[in-house]
Length: 337
Ligand code: TYM
Image (cartoon, rainbow, N blue to C red; front, side):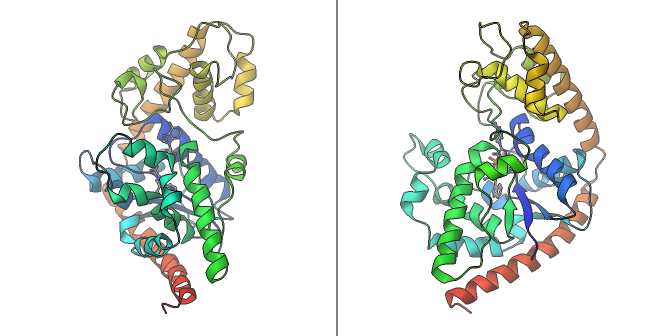
């Protein structure tokens, strides 16, 4: 089996500019660069969606999310596959088998689990077990590179651990995903991507943040979105430089500009070095975001549900074949077949 680049995007509600720049756009760029050497798997983790509340209709949201990749310019060929996780039952089956290797301690240490369960009396088992299903999503397909934002790196580390443990105990069957450092290099980044909350840039931009000005949603009107950039929190140092620790607001704007334009971060930083007017930088980024959203929204609306359903049908036939084969090998090694 050839190696794979794979990613998934949960669609419980609309997605943010953080999701877009952290995972979706990097995936499209990697797919266009590498689909002659790697299989490109893009799936909708709909089983992950049901661990928490879903706004609107999941089945509509997930068709929409495939349109996002198409609208972002992904080039289709026989190596690019789209599928829904729940249509490939091997994901759930492998998740169970990996559950028997993972420990409570490991899952308890996951930052996302800690964040999502903090202060709650009762927490669903799905939230706790979520990273093991993610490991199954990855390991079924020999996925080496997984373009995700920095918040998912801990889950990638866990995936590597579970794969190693399985290989040691039962036989070499799983390809280990690249380390976070190798992932970052492959994505042509110097570090993991974490787009910040516009009002409170110490935190990541998140769909669950209540304050509307803190986040840009992909279906904000382009004007609304550019106003949010103009009102982003910065600092009073009067220097445009990349320093996430002391100037997270300014650094976030530089990062957003680099990801949208496709210009390496170092080059964007050099362009602005020595400048002191934050308003100029904000205006530039606000315009980039405005143009991005208006092009993107226009393109999404031209793609039909039918086109997406056809892609999913082909992709799901491929995914079931690959995943069932891998699952069978795993079951054999464990003595179940
Ligand atoms: P999810 O749906 O929470 O987020 C989707 C992707 O968006 C990235 N992301 C960000 N990147 C940069 N800055 C931000 N502020 C930001 N917010 C979110 C996330 O890192 C992610 O890449 N567990 C995954 C879905 C999943 C998956 C997988 C991904 C399930 N199985 C297998 C890859 C491989 C999740 O919930 O991401």
